[in-house]
Amino acid sequence: MAPIPVKPGKYKIHAHIIGPTSLLTATEYAVKHGAPVITDRFNPLPIEQEWIVDAADHEVVGSPYVIHLAYHPAAGLVVPEDKLFVNSVPRAEWAKFTFERVIGGVKILSDKGLALRAGHRGAQIELVAPQPEFQETWTLEYAGPIPSEE
Image 1 (cartoon, one colour):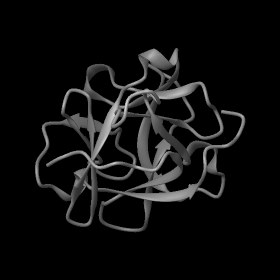
Image 2 (spheres, helix red, strand yellow):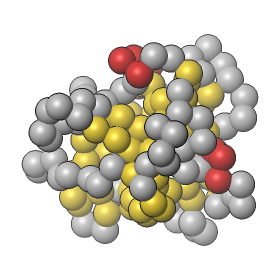
Image 3 (tube, one colour):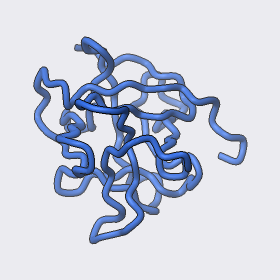
Image 4 (cartoon, helix red, strand yellow):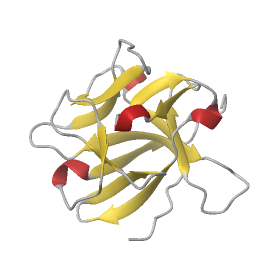
């Protein structure tokens, strides 16, 4: 499918896994490549569960997107070893993503064409060859514009 445009802004990214609402969540501990990104139940503290989705290059129409923590503008998503981490590295090192419409939501694809997959609540998000699977479907809940301090 063709990539779809996404309005730049602050989002909650819901995983389509069985059970109560699960959100894309940065864990509190860092390992080799940064803090692993998982799905977890809604947390009343949005610090690790709200994300900024923004064009990677504002000068290029249809540019892929970068994603970073809403309250930590230097902490962007990176994809070493086909697993999702958040790390404070230069923006040029952040992973780039596109979005495709699928039944029930969107598929989030890396610049290598791999899909984000939430195996189960608490598992680190993996990037896999896209399949028509529920665990690779996400809902973007728009939570407002990009804060002005960006």
